[in-house]
Each structure stands twice: as C-alpha cells, then as structure tokens.
View (cartoon, rainbow, N blue to C red):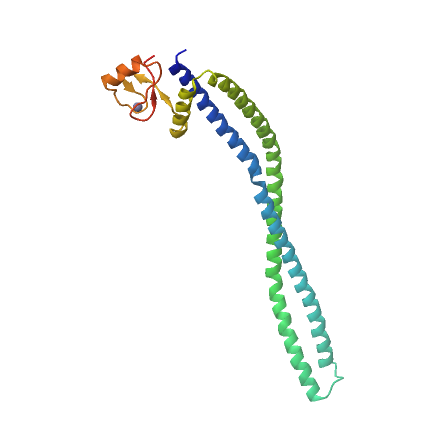
Length: 233
Ligand SMILES: [Zn+2]
C-alpha cells in the first residue's frame, strides 16, 4: 500500500471514530438529563409546599371564623340579654360587637378565595404527580436502552481504536505527524483526492508543475488550500 492510500484509510477510520465519539457523548448527555425528571421533581416539591401552605391558611381562617362567631355570639347575649343596664357599659359592648362583626365579615370574604387556592394547588399537585409517575416509567425503559447503547458504542469505539493504532504503527513518523496536524486543524480532513487535476478539497485545478511533482512524489504533497493531496489512484 502506498503511503497516500494508508493515510486515506487512516482518515476513514478517524472520521468513523469521531462519529462514534459524538454518538457516545450524546448518549452520555441524555443519561445525565434523566429524562427531565429532576426538574419535574423540583416543581412537584414546590407545588407540594404551596398546597400545604394553602391548607394551613384555610385552616387558620376557619379557626378564626369559629373564634369570632362565638365572640360575636357572647357579645350579643350580653347586649340583648337584659342583664346589663349601664349605658356606658352597653356602649362599650356595642363598639366591641361592631368591631368583631367587621372582622368576621373580613374572614368570611377571605375563606372562599383561600379554599380555591388550596384546591387549585391540590389539582396541580395531582397532575404533576401523575406526570412524574408516567415519565418516570418511560425513563426507566429509556435508561436501560441508553445503558446498552453506551456499552455498544463504547465497545465499537475501542475495537476501532485498536485497529487504528495497529495501522498507525506502520506509518512513518513524519507523515503521521503531518497528517495528525492537518486532521486536527482542518475539522477531520487531512487528505483529499485529486481528480482529473482538480483538488477535491478546495476545487482548485493544480498547475501542471504541481501535478507533475505530485505524480513523482512517493507520498502526498501539500495543496495551496492547506490540505494534503493524493494522486488520482
Ligand atoms: Zn486543495
């Protein structure tokens, strides 16, 4: 095999390896994302706290309501029971009664919205919990698939890499160094073919002198585009 053909075969392998490496990373990223479950769990936790707070608020209002109702009841008994005849004392009770009635009205107005908020939070929590359960099941399956995929791609990659490294040991050091430099700087293209005198990398027609030089060289020569060249073979 000529050095040009060897390098071309090496490039094919390196490109295939790069694709496998990309696939492997994608699998790793998806595994890391856990199917979006951490964010969903977070949201679930937030709404759970919200629901609890709404329940506590509702209960507080109900308790205040009961207290105020009995307070108003007691004041009314004293006010209309006939036991108190002192005008000043009656006026004081009347003032207290009005204030308690106002507070009672306020509490009564707050109860319905608080219950709506609690119910809304409860429903949202139920929805999120269902979503979490179904997505969790889907993820369990996907996780297994991804694990198998990761092993498969990783094994393929390592096998290819072994073949590649065996091939590389046959290539003269200077050629390999030039190839490696070009492969890295040129996004995975170090060697391009010359077809009917035209560089297939940059589409430039080679001057006759260059073509002659290429044909008489025992390896690839650099093109003005910065890539290495091959003969038409
Ligand atoms: Zn070129």
